[in-house]
Image (cartoon, rainbow, N blue to C red; front, side, top):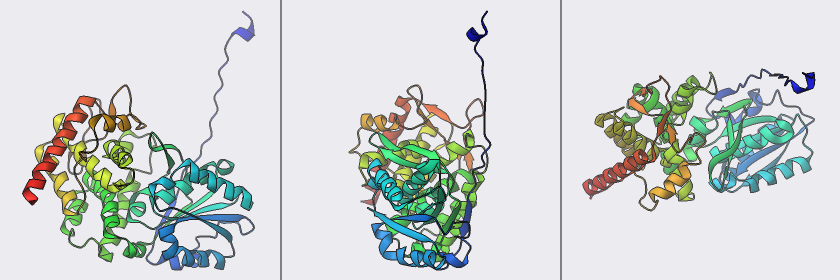
Length: 384
């Protein structure tokens, strides 16, 4: 047999460690130049800072002053303060501005804002020249406890959220809890949803702490503790295998349903609000499958209601429309939704084979949503 007819197989790989340094410090945004944040950044290169119109008014000047005092050259691009900025339109504008400005492989993207800005800037950094420097300055509670504390960078597409993205680390993530003082209480609640996710899945003491402080949501000491503890808990499931079934399903708890609700709402329901609803529906799924109990389901509704978060899938969204969006979840497979489920507070529910990702039939999802809506109706009657 000719040697040319025998297939020959070759393999190659490269070991690349994904690593980010998270620095939590009150009033950090006023002192970035004295904290060593810019020491690894080349002075001769040109850099770009991405922010949104709301954050621009509050914190842009102080951050630019720190960067300028460090001797670095930076330009600013301001995007609308909405989920719509996580799009190809704004991504392409960022690419054009960066290249026209004279970016090189040592240039750095700074993100100053919430999760939308963090994700957009992160995806830009991961793709320009196949990867350039990235530094996050998260300014919302949601970004400080979740969006910026990750390797995931993404933009949205018409079919759903975060469908186009990459795994790419920021070299530094600087978290300043004092900036949360300027947040509207709705955004505080929105960020709490991701903190509560980690509390429900990992730490009952933290869950008790949040519930016991439900009347003090804007207290700076409370928020500082929430930020610090949430980061600690998230890093427990960030420092291992990126493909870990347990780590991924825990981080994505409530997101299969939540992302569908968020996308259908076209910005009316914020991310954390949608994930709050998604976790309540997920609890109903676990109950229907015999993996949890009524007490755990009730706990979900109670904790989110206490902090003023929504718990019910809006009636305006049909089951078929919700399913259409769930289909575009990256874990959806063979006509089934994929999600992590909670057995009881602090304990994830394993599958029969010891994994933690459950494939859920459409009929179960629909029944769980209907149960969720009936619970919402009962709660509304009690309030009235």
